[in-house]
Every structure is written in C-alpha cells, then in structure tokens.
Amino acid sequence: MFNNVKRPFFASTQTIRLNPIPDPIYAAFIESKFQKAKRKIDSGAIEFILKFTRTHTFYTQSLCNRLYADGNKHIKQETVAVTALRLLSEQEPVFFQYRSLLTMQQWNLLRAIAIEDTVQKPHSKHFIMRHQLESASNVQRSLDALIKKEMVYKEQTDDGVFYRVYDCFLSRWLSKMR
Image (cartoon, rainbow, N blue to C red; front, side, top):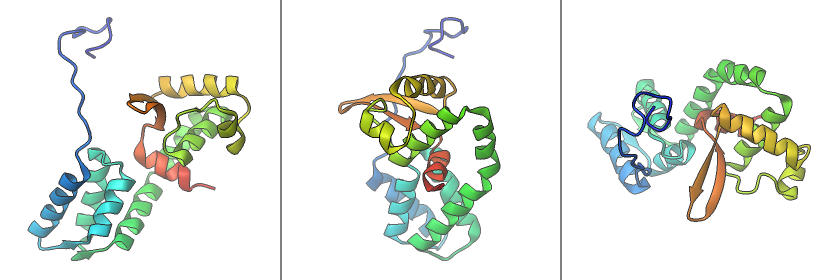
C-alpha cells in the first residue's frame, strides 16, 4: 500500500522494521497472562510455543488462545505439542487448497524450504539433491512464483539472504508430512 507506486498512499510514510519480541520478554508475558488466570504453564511449554511459532505474534497468540480455551490448569510441553498438532490438523483443508493452486515443482520446493525452516542456498546442488528437486533453473522459476504468490519470503540479514515459508503453521505442517 505504501511501497507501490500505483497505490494512492505511495511514499506517504516512513518504513520502520519491527523486530521480533525477544524470547525472554515474550516468555515472561505469556507466563504472566496464564498466572493472572490462575493457571501454570511450564517454562518448557513456553519455549515450545515460541520455537513452534517463531515468536510471530499471530501464531503465538493463536496457539496460546487455544491453550487458554482448553481450560487446563497446568500446561506442560506435551499439552502444547498436542494442541499445536490439533491446530495444524484443523488447517489441513486450507493447506490442501494451497496444494491444488501450485505446480508439483512449486509444492515440492515449498515443502523442501519448510523442512529446512530457512534456506540460504536453494540453488545449491546439495539442497536440490537432498530434496529431489529437478534442477537449479526449475528451482529458480518455482521460487520466483512462490515469492510472487507470497508463499515464501526472502529476507536479508547480517548472515546473508535466506528464504522461508511465509505461513508458520503451513511450514510446520509441511515439515511433518511424509
């Protein structure tokens, strides 16, 4: 909306980067919300939540909301793992719909990126062979399409460029599929 020259609000704001909330701060916040409701959540459960959701607020909130709604008075890591899998299972119809919108090469690349979690060299022979992808040129075409469809994003960090599946829950589901 602000970065596209064809949109009415183009260049009308200053872009800022919002970094993830640091894990210790997020963990304390989650623990305090459960304590306020007179519930205990183990530190291992919180670590699992933050790792599973990549500390992304939408996914963290979704998982914590489900845990809260389930009414457990003491939440352990095993409880979170079962709840997370249930959330993924409930999303399967949407995930299968994504599958029908992609070519086989795009789907296979999306799944390979999900399995790796982050990929720095999607064109490397090692990555292509490990995930039985066709060729570097097919990977590039599929990657371009997945980025355009906002299924994968490309990010520049101090460590270089990496690619990741945009939807955290889709990524977790794809990495568990066999």
